[in-house]
Length: 192
Image (cartoon, rainbow, N blue to C red; front, side, top):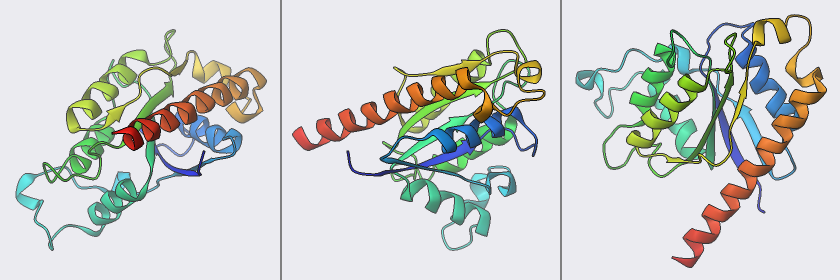
């Protein structure tokens, strides 16, 4: 496997978020061949407005975000669950990456979704919503491998996810499956 750059997008903007910690843990346990980097700028994106989506007049935050998505080989979304769905800032990021229609930065980009939440199912509703929205936006959503960590506020109250042996093992397994899925997509493209 050649090295793949993976842009990590955290759905929570809160500095101490357990999803941010889960993303940091993923970076820490990434296998050889996957270079994960957390994107810090999507919180600065203005609300999507097609009237403002004019090439040459885009806000710097949008230009930077679209360029980061386009440059990555794949995207890993780490999302909390807000009122049973994805956070508004994540939906906004999806909208900005889905344009311009037909040549967007997310178009055909391999993408996986994981997350954690205080709820007993680990935010699976939000993860399903994120996969759906990204799929409609044109990403190649990898659904075969997932990770949902429940009871995050309690579980990670005193332990960072990277220091939780069970979570580190689950993340490593997820990332191994993600890397394999990326290799399979490469093989499909080469055969086409």
